[in-house]
Image (cartoon, rainbow, N blue to C red):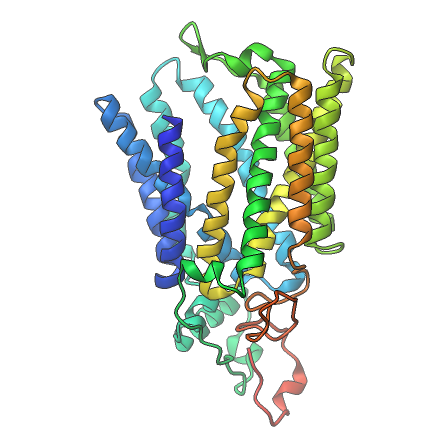
Length: 423
């Protein structure tokens, strides 16, 4: 069952990412939400194993589009606050991680069908609100030559924020003419983007192995039987609530810390430091099993999960920022597919017969390799989203050229400047 959902998400993340770059962010987001909602509810009406696998595959397909709304949000934010605001929404990820076992605990004794229906409700609400509130990305509209629609979205955003568009936007302000050429998945492996793409994929795969592997490892440390046993015990759901509490509280703490640092010390230092420190605490936790008391193990697990969350969240931010508009959702989706592959691998490293100390050594190496991969990504702090490299730059060296779309605070002198301004 889990493999079926994984297969669906792997296909969905590539298909919906490509769709978002070619047909729009908003349609891709709404399609993904619709698929998760519809097939999530249809799961309750499955009449056999084959039909259950089919609907869960489609749920996974929809989940594959999770990167698209993240990219929409990123494309609306100014550089000075983008990192912070992109990280704040990760609190909702943690909230969902807490809600899922809670709903399971309250409903699975009664009916698993009720559980899957209730699990689909948040996505139904999200899709309905998104259809009403989420506009198309102005950056994407510009990239496909729909400048008039892009300006309408900008004016609507200004109005929504309680300001007069005619006062904020000078009549001489223009949209910069940088319409993107057609693109496809192969562009990620072109000479210009190959190096960045490969390091992104390695970072995502490593972060997923570390993130999900640490969750499983913490469960294994505090409840060895739960790591190997089935999810149910005598007909009732069996959850290790201590591990859940450690993971959830650590993620909240880690998010709070990285929100303070991501726009000050930068994306790359935040990732490198977080992955290295998470690996060290994971190694220390594994080495301490059988010798340290429960308090020490709890502290090590908490810090491991906190730094794991810090690195993972900043990797999401970096991915959205360094890719150009025309391949942003395709590239982000492909990276997410690598992450899902890493998540699929992690149980085999942690939940097998490997001694816990061997697991600690493996996880330390994985974290160090992830940090090394992140170190080779370009720093995006303070840069506008879009093309981070010159068209003639085939070596991957970072550039600070203007982007296709940027936000500027209104300046009074624009009114008297004879040259047109560029937005």
